[in-house]
Length: 198
Image (cartoon, rainbow, N blue to C red; front, side):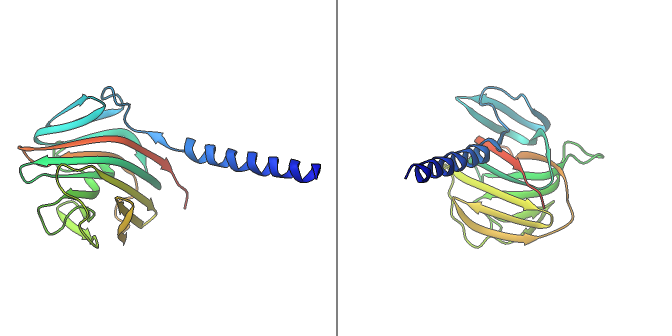
């Protein structure tokens, strides 16, 4: 009986250790206080208020200093305003010839007013991976999760898989958030990522 008790204690401690390790794998992209760890391109205005990263004004992007190739990402986003259109870019870099233009990389679309809506995978100017359904609306928080390993890319919207696609064009780069045009606003919080291996 004593041996059984010891075995159960060992199993519980090992399970707890694995759980804590899995939780600690996540790296925060946003500290909720300021723009440390980010850099700006374009003409959007980026601020931090009440723990939210907010972008509005003219077209522009804010990039993380972090770079990732194979990763998992999770974050919360809210869009509002006139024809609100934003996105979370990944494996993305500012174009060398026009750094204030749209990033070169993949985009998880955040938009409810067009056919290639929230949950679609976009490449520059081109809807590429189709989302199975539209699950979100303006002025509501969107739970976005991305997994990218090699060419295999998966999107979850509000904990439901909506897009799976294979593409090999972009292999490494930054995360970035978009303000598409004047009159809209994007807010973001609770953004984390962790490295994965193929």
